[in-house]
Image 1 (cartoon, rainbow, N blue to C red):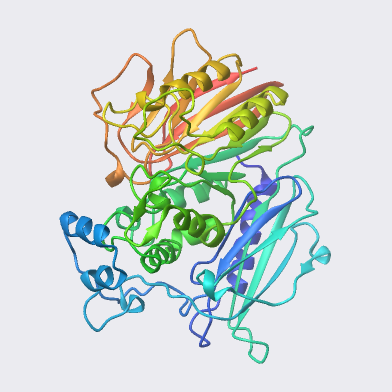
Image 2 (image 1 turned 135 degrees about the vertical axis):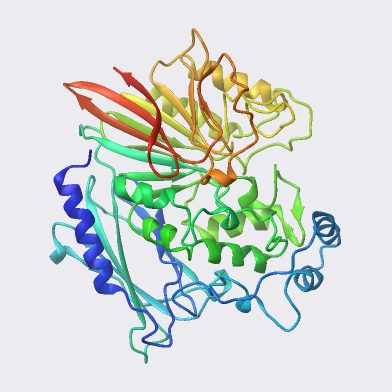
Length: 489
């Protein structure tokens, strides 16, 4: 249960947002994608935003031409951008004309931020131009922040120095408390969205359910969008950007992401296509370019794509990277075959051992325990990565306070192997219509819980009568708790 000060924070932010909101009172540019953040620790965070031609997605736009999977595969093989576009965009139209398009715009932005409790301490940065070559986006890395503090963010837009302010947005983030501080912390974990598998016209309703909880932070484990799904099949950079622009213009996502501290991971569909690995392409886009679009353009950037963050005395999280360093899926398993890469794996082992946090939570894009379908060959629970998977499971098993969370699988589960310290919590897809890939009746001995439905995972760390307590709760898409596991130390 959130404290009274937290509730006041929510009300205050809503009031700030209302005071900053403008619509079609100017000719733009606008903040049609809002803003979001990433990589927060006690003293720093990265903020991201994008300028758009309109304040919202194009609800009256035209539909894409629906092509078959066979036609997609032929276009993928030919890798001709003009043909890929002509096959999916009606003649005489452009991407700007398509349904839910949120096209970019040149212009300048200005950032102001300050602690919730002290507006006089505000930091006001100079106007800067968005990068037209990076989809009209820009980023700021803020440093020298105060641990355990709530910050208000205000961003203004204008066309140029001779123009008036054309749009304003506001939101918030919070920094993690220092590692010696005992504090209740609540967070949510989600996976697998996709624009066409949303369950309301305004977006995925899990974001409304999570907003009511107002978690301290949230982790998206990847498959935020699906390049390799139709309407359109995103086999060019332009179509990939279109999909990001479209999903981040959804009001539910836009509102939530502007107010909650966030960590984004990526998975295969965010890079290129299903089960993507180095050396692959999708249409005209290379593996390297797919990584770059995600990490340097569409999301807050960091020097490494993995990080560990302490959230007070009782919680430390690990955000791992499961795509950048992996071996090709199709080579034989063995000691050299990897997903994490040796540097990240040794970092994980070292930081786990050094941590004195009461509870340690590793958040992965993909499962480590599973179980998974026998036909899959893309993660540590599959036989194709069993050697390194066994090494990681054996290492983690020495600790009695390490817990795994994962995305990617389109069903919710809790897995625990008898007589081990191994626990894994799969958050499930972001909507019921996205759930599948496992049969509800296929309940294995290691399953403590199985539900082939959508929703999210909620976790809470607190002291109950002085006892450190970690609670994991699986929630349905409306936020109702459907399963709970409680651990104490």
